[in-house]
Amino acid sequence: MKKIIKNKYIKKIIVAMSLVSVMSVTVPVDAAEIKNLDARGAIVVEKNSGKILYGKNIDEVLGIASMSKMVTQYLILEAIHNGEVTWDTQIPISPALSKMSINYELSNVPLRANVSYPLKDLYEAISIYSANAAITAVGIYLGGSEDAWVQKMQETVESMGITDARLVNPSGLPYRYNIQKNKNLSEDDENSMSPRSVAILAQRLITDYPEILDTASIQKKTFQPGTVDETKMSNYNLLLPGLLFGRDDVIGLKTGTSALSGASVTAVAIQNNTSVISVVVGSSAPLKRFEESSRLLDYIFTTYETIPFIKKGDSAQQITPYPVVDGKDQVITFDYDRDYYAAVPKGASPDQIIVEFTPNPERVNEENQIQAPITKGENLGYVTITTPGKDLGYLQEKDNTIPVVASYDVEEVGHLTKVWRQIKVFFAGIRDSIKDFFSGIFNSIKNFFHPSEEPATN
Image (cartoon, rainbow, N blue to C red; front, side):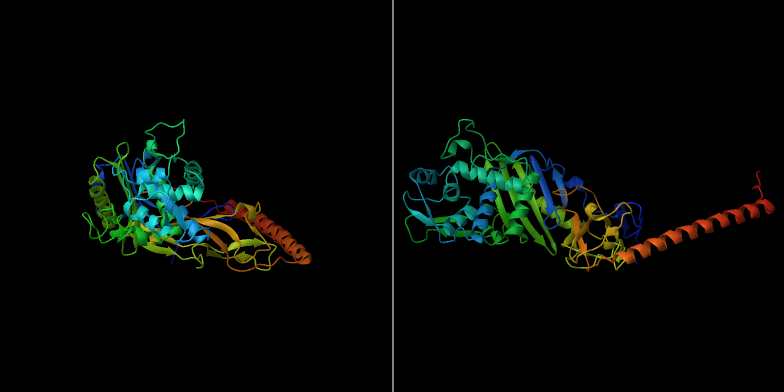
């Protein structure tokens, strides 16, 4: 039986689901194996919960090169879902964009001036081949100008809770390749954010629009087949199955390389029930990012597993029924309002997970009671989850907090019932005071006639 601790005089209830220490779990692989990671920064998180499983310089702002294309990928899919564009929408190509597209120092597919291409073709070129002119063309079309699109990108990442991003173009190239130039920026300026922020971006992208993985996982495809511009596109993410560093568990997501930022890759991998996002930023050589990512994934999947711990709509049985004032029911129970997957060291038990309940401060009185009336589904607080093993935190502050809602309606009682309850409480208080008074007298008399003996000393 789960052990539940309740104190009605405090505003937090801690539910310790086991007496076993959370530090007692044996980790099968020593974390020292990945201390010398060839990367300026890195992070691995469990996709659903956002729990950080590994980190190196996770909050250091670094150049991320083409991994910043994920912002525009997100906005393309958002525009599709909102009906603002379709996959058949034609994207025009200016002479400047056409010139950029045949710069083969860059990753590109050739685009002809004054010709329009279906959005779907350019999206695939972006997601598979990291095509720079293609993503610039889409940004200019959707935003009206390159600068306006960059502003849209900045606003989008900020809405995700990313505050350290500095974006200068859609592509992730050095600023000197921009179609529009801003006098306040230098030619070497690049898109930058921390590994944590890249992981937040990737998590939002694959959570809100999981279909991105259908395209990002394509190993090879041909752009404009059967034309003079036919281009064989081979995915730069060499972790994908069938490629040089291929792994059966990798299903995406995005690479990035520049002289300033080094070689980087964001990978999404799944084994059994465990789905992780790995971000490696600034490896010393293009192939090193894949070696190090694979080493990280091996470590994570050897060490951790994921337990489906909470399901939306389930009764929050870990929380004792909570007192209600002025309600026909005098207690309320709770249901969970979202899923939670607990990433734990292998061999850990669900009983080692700690659940802490905090009531909604706007719904409780000074006696820590919830005021009736209560509506079924109304938010009444949240639980905070603490899992066993090393605590590296979560991607974002509230990732391990789960909202809880009222399981049922509680109507407010009428005025006479409120008065009657107050009278009962009043006389109950008098009764308890009288009982305590006479109990004190009785104990005094008893101690007078039968004083306790002093303990013997040696």
